[in-house]
Every structure is written in structure tokens, then in C-alpha cells.
Image (cartoon, rainbow, N blue to C red; front, side):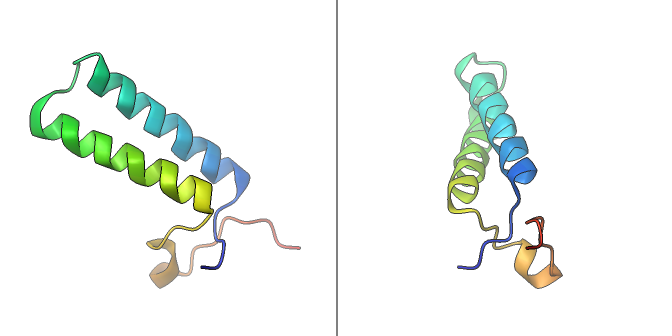
Length: 67
């Protein structure tokens, strides 16, 4: 997959993923909403590690710096 995420985008996603995990594990958000947040956190971490977001492709979004 072609990389389409810049460093700032990756950092923001990781921070949001950590926030979601903290909300879930401190039981601030529970039940179905908590599980959904945990799944979103996992997706954010995965896309940050890969450097590519599939949802950016149809919209032509690319946050990588141009070389």
C-alpha cells in the first residue's frame, strides 16, 4: 500500500488511540461504546504503524510531505 500519512497525522492518531484506551480501561466509557472506542483505537494504531489510511484513497487525501 502506498503511504499517505505524514508524521503529524500519525502522532495525532496515536494520541487519540491512547485517549480511547484510557477512557475504556478507566471505565469512563463502558459497554458497546467502549468496545467501539477500543476497536477504533486499534485501527488508529494499525494505520499509524503502516503509514497508510484506506479511507484517504477515495478522497485523494495525502498528508505526506512531498519530496
